[in-house]
Image 1 (spheres, one colour):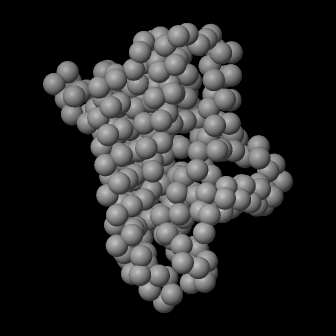
Image 2 (cartoon, rainbow, N blue to C red):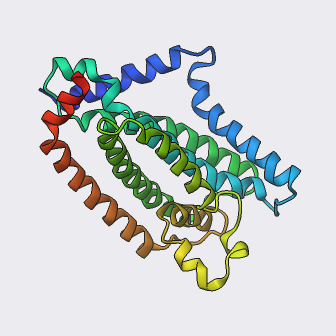
Length: 253
């Protein structure tokens, strides 16, 4: 089977089918994250008066990357179960399904990032040479998302209730990643290094470092996150290969 050809065809068809289910179609790709930004801005920037100068930009630089991870991991968690019909009819590597979800959401995220960059430009944050650092940051986040998605999708067929724990865990991750607060202002200096052990918090810090401060990212941190994610991806692909018949048996029930 030509997996790459099937992957691209399935990716295109899924994106088109998803857009056809709503009146606004493809616009929801950018409207959904935009609405999240508006809600959190009003909660923290207006109602709670927690906003600082350029708070909207601060919020966008953290929330948009986090929503990408959160949405993709949530969608990937059930990727094997919802494709039980195909799995029962075709011998296909089970990692195909969560990876398909990852790249569907990555395709949508490209347009979200483009809109985000346009918004930043309108607010005076124009690209400099340091913005080239966004390429390795986005690549690192993509590797992290693939690793997390493969783990979630592998566990859910065995323990379906884990989906609820994943949703709660992602909410906890949002509050623990400095999305709507500056960890430098909240945490004591001796606690900041522990905070940045959270890979998503580290990535958010790097997005802001490049976009808002015009500085190059923390290359060492990116390298560690990317390497760890790559190792997890490699190990998970081996797990999927070994558990192939177990997945097939579970979804057939």
